[in-house]
Amino acid sequence: MSSTQDGYPSGRNPDEGEEGTLCDRESPLSAKRLSKAEKKQLRQALREAHWKTHAPKERENRRRNRSARISAMKAAGKDPSVELPTGKKNIFYLRKKRPVDQIVFSNIRVVIDLSFDHLMNDRAINSLVTQVSQCYATNRKLECPLQLHLTGFGQRFQQKITSLDGFEKWAIKTHSESYLDLFPRSDLVYLCDGSENVLRTLEADKVYVIGGLVDHNQHKGICYNLALENHIETARLPLEVLSEMKACKVLTVNQVFQILSDMSVKTDWKECLQLAIPKRKYPNSVQSYPNPEKKSEVHVDT
Ligand code: SAH
Image 1 (cartoon, protein in one colour):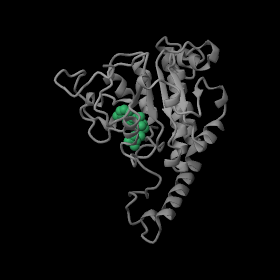
Image 2 (image 1 turned 180 degrees about the horizontal axis):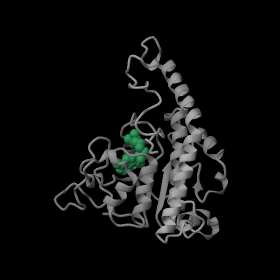
Image 3 (image 1 turned 180 degrees about the vertical axis):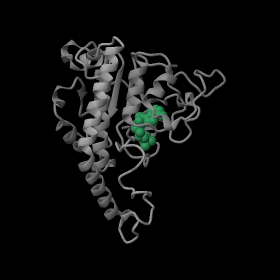
Image 4 (image 1 turned 135 degrees about the vertical axis):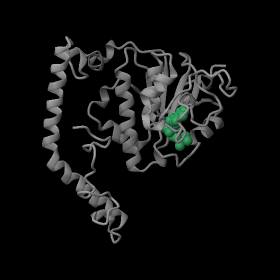
């Protein structure tokens, strides 16, 4: 059975009534007398009830799909232990399992600036921890992972991330200091969606800084303004390549990191952006890149 992005079997949401939608008069959630918090609680309870009944069926479906995929691979002469992401001979699986002292790192350095603890509530901090974990997982899959630094560790973020299983073994550098005290300013490029410079290539002598902030853009331009104050170069990702991407130009930390890590091994921005950004954000992308007509596109290394 296919599923929607939030994990529900496609077609119907458990919040919906037998035939209707959330707004249906029949739905308990549509009752006007319920407060926002009560509706949230009810929604959660409905979701849990849904999974209690459907989880065994879902598990069985997944098991059956996996067996079918394995059979299809075998029939096509492919080795499932190589093709499946969890196969013992799968290249990404093997890279993930490499001992840290056997990793050859790329020269490209990336900092996640974690100095925004005070601007986030617990939920946003949790979300940031998940995003940083995803960055780490993406990095481990590279043949030559980027040099990943976490700087300016905020207390709440630190507490959460250090409680993750195996965090102490991560191939990552953590610093309580700011990136400003760790690297020469001339090497730093703060990535900001509002920059007038477009990032074209990743340079080995630069340090790319990503703002470790989950704020649904409440603090619009905060990283850009900080970079200006500190006289640091800035650059935005060339999202123009996805010409249909009109709505939100602000990406998440893990999306930005994935784009950088893909660009460390590929040359095509469009391909890398498409790999990291959900399709719904750029329905009919057509434009190729670089576009010589666009005077605003500046080489960040000049
Ligand atoms: N409200 C924050 C955005 C946080 S998004 C702000 O305005 O600064 C988290 C981080 O991802 C940003 O700090 C930035 O480093 C990076 N980022 C997001 N979208 C980007 C884009 N289009 N180009 C370059 N960096 C981007």
